[in-house]
Structure formats: C-alpha cells, structure tokens
Image (cartoon, rainbow, N blue to C red):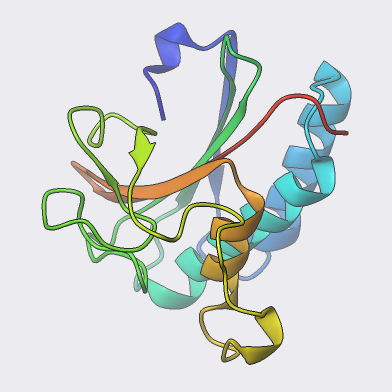
Amino acid sequence: MPDPASAIASWRFALPHTPVAVPLARALVRNTLADTGTPVDRHAAELLTAELVANAVQHTDGDEPIELVMGLAPTGQWQVEVHDRDPAPPAALRDPGTQNGPGVQSGPGAQDGPGTQDGPDTPNSGAPDPREVPERGRGLQLLRTLSAEAGYRSTPEGKAVWFTLPAGAR
C-alpha cells in the first residue's frame, strides 16, 4: 500500500483476534464505502476484506489485534491491508525479497506496498476454475481474480496482506 500520507483519505481499525472480526470488517468496509461514495465494486471489497481477515484470524496465533487499513488513493483505487503479528507469508505468496512467485509483488516498491505484479497469476489471466480449487486456498484465488493488484509485505510487527480495487465499478 502506498504511503498513507499520499492517500486522499485513510482509515485504521483494530479488530479482535476472533471470528467476530470478519463481520466487523465487512461492516466497516461497507459503511466506509457508502459514506464516502467511493466508486468501486463494494461487494468485491467486502468479500476480499472478509477473506483476508478470516485468514489472519485462522492462521495466526495469539490474541493481538488484527489491523484493518483502508485508503483511497489519488488514482481513485481503493486499497485494503490486513496486518497481523505472524511474519510467515500467506499460502501461495512468498516474501517479496525472494524469487518472484504467483501473486507476489517485487521491485523497489514491494516493501512499501502495491507495485507491479509478476508472473502468470495477474488478475483474470488464466486463473483455474474455482470449482477445481481445493476449499483451502480459495480466498487467495478470489484475491488474485477480483483485485486489480494484491500482495504481501513484511512489517516490523509481522506482515500485511493487501489488495487494490480499480475505481469505476459500484
């Protein structure tokens, strides 16, 4: 995610490290998008945010809060990051500092947020049929399919998994 100082607007929310965080995150996204009139696919924004928050709750230990960060970029893109305390990358994503892999951001901006997506798994490019994807991993498949960009980056406290949605769709 680009520097929050360059965003037109941004929001940060601490969510409990429990399953109740998922509907809370959906409501926060829904209400923020409605209040701001941001022209993005609101259903995709809610779904992808819910997937990232659910993954953070399910796959990280401890009771430290999960942080939801949303922002509206000057380009009109909607940006979402979900921060957790576990430094391990999510399934199918590798650390941006290593060799590129599916859905991985790389290059100079990788540690700061969205950059150029490498590899064959750019959104809507030959993605496997969702009916053929095992139940585990469908969230990341949705992320790669529905977002304009998606990735992972290390943070001093753990990691952030993020996505952007293009402006224009409601």
